[in-house]
Length: 237
Image (cartoon, helix red, strand yellow):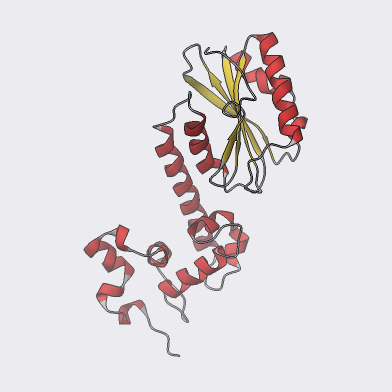
């Protein structure tokens, strides 16, 4: 089969021209990637190359565009036609997209709502292949004071001690905390370990005058809130 270059395609089928004429929202996933990649190889145009990238992404932990987030630079460079520069560009586009989604969700984050908190951190954590544990700190009016990532890649949450969880909260003089971690399996159901560490943190917080307001476990488009399930009882701070 003869190689068809982008210039040989009708103008209305070229992603760049199509974006200019009718808008980026009209482009397919492959066409969007083709614009970012800009060039193909001597054997394939950028649209074909983009399709191959999406196919490789579909073989990762998530299908389609979200799968790009799971491909390393080395994984991307294994795709014929993707060198180091294009691989880095694709990784940066994936990270930029994640940050845009997180920033957008942050604007509507309601610290009194487990669902709101979960939706925000779901965008941040649901694609992660390792466990991440965060602590969110709140003031006397339940206003967000900041977050601290306590661990990354820890398979057993019990390895995180209450002392580590409350150290930053004490430094910031927070009166309440919410702890959040993800389950890379996608199932947010709490483990026995999750239940145990929640109990220990709640009791430690009571002695320190800092309430554990919730422990939220993030899955793939799902979450588990200890507060919503009646496993944490507290008063407004």
